Length: 119
Image 1 (cartoon, rainbow, N blue to C red):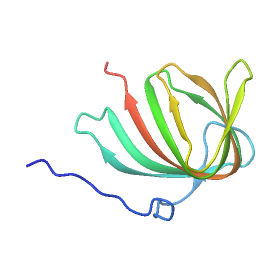
Image 2: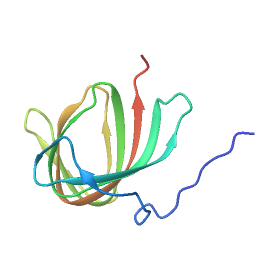
Image 3: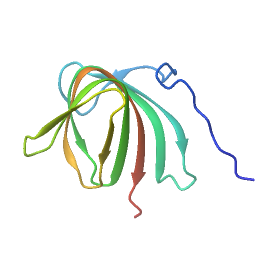
Image 4: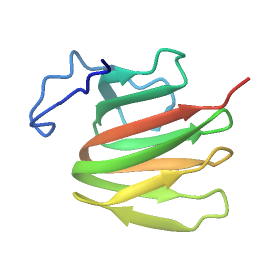
């Protein structure tokens, strides 16, 4: 039998210690994450992530990511400068190949689903 997994109260779930954000380019950003599920082949990862205000680069060359904003406020910026603000309840899809910046305006928590490209 294949069972399913349930994770409740993602807005307040423990995610572990905060550490400096390696791709941060502005602000003294700290982040924490907790993997909730990983596929047996390692190509699918689902978890929760939280980050403090600031700005960082993102590169989805090798994977796609779907994000559901649980709390906080972010601005997503494309390389051409266009930007979009997102907040609680919003869903964001970053297709494989997307590159740009996240600007965390308020400490933000998201549910993420990352699908890594098959190599």
